[in-house]
Length: 456
Image 1 (cartoon, rainbow, N blue to C red):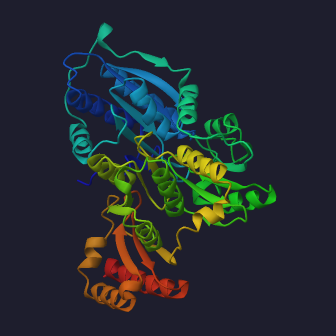
Image 2 (image 1 turned 45 degrees about the horizontal axis):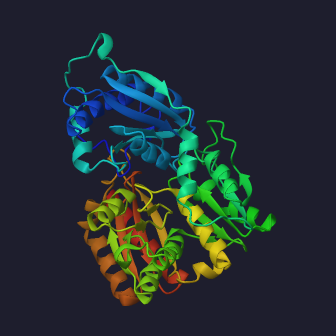
Image 3 (image 1 turned 120 degrees about the vertical axis):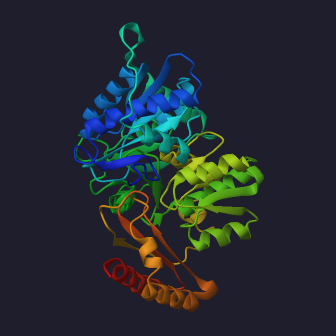
């Protein structure tokens, strides 16, 4: 049986693979497993539940809440909020765990369910495996006063906005900024907190209707942000994804500033403020080689992990590091947050603009990106995410030969990374090289070899 949990919870097409029945069963299993890990010993468990504005989130929320309450868990509904807000409120509310119903940057038909532990961190593989193993198991149902109660937290948004305001060192007065809210969970929170800190905000894609989330907008479609920054004569712009756990940016001329560049800006700012623990930044193997070289030149150590912000967070916790993130825009400011928070990262970068008076383009120039090409090769959709054919390709002589040829050509001037996606049935082929042309050519050759291996 394939593994249900991917790198970021359970995802699928809502009402197709991710059904109300599965959501209810997951909630029951999670209540039992997390209750045991919390050593509840008969104490009533408390959970907070939030979601992004997808239409399917409405029935999935109802199913999750039903499962939790039927298992004797008291549920506090947070409503539509960013994923990192749920992580924060799990801790602030002294809940035993939190649940987020969101598929992040995925298209609207998808949805997902992920859990936060009492400390606001994502569950480790062991706990996720235990939840999955508990699905469908017999259990004794509480009755009468022992069933869980359900209430709504009317102050959840205000509490999260207050937290963000406290986490930003300087006011943002004098900055004109565009915020692309991806018709998602940050549509209210992000403009509100930026304006509260003094910024002149132009909010775009901030009218979610349950159907338009991530549709040609947000961090997966940055062209509207770039155009708006130029048209509005803004100092910069930030694009979030559907659940606002990541952000990308645009400088004043409309050039993209990616997660590696934002991470580099924050690393230098935090070191200057004495906040960068052990002068170390945690990132993944997907980070641009230019980022690694720039940090090394600044005397900052780069610790790389597998792809996924959960692995970044695990390494940060293990080493007590305070900054980590991914090229995709997941950035964890560890002295304030327990997971990637796109709004917080954007606020901290904007604060750097306000403090230094330097434009975003100049701050981002601390690193020079090597041309990087990413090609997705469709694997077997019946396979679980994370197992979409890499093992098959690795054993194929044609692919092995193509990979050796590519690595020999690049030498120390670039690199190749071939890995399965943790959220989609695809194999990702990434190549960095001295020129865009060379990177594209090698990536295409490797992708062809992967396709041949998967169909042989």
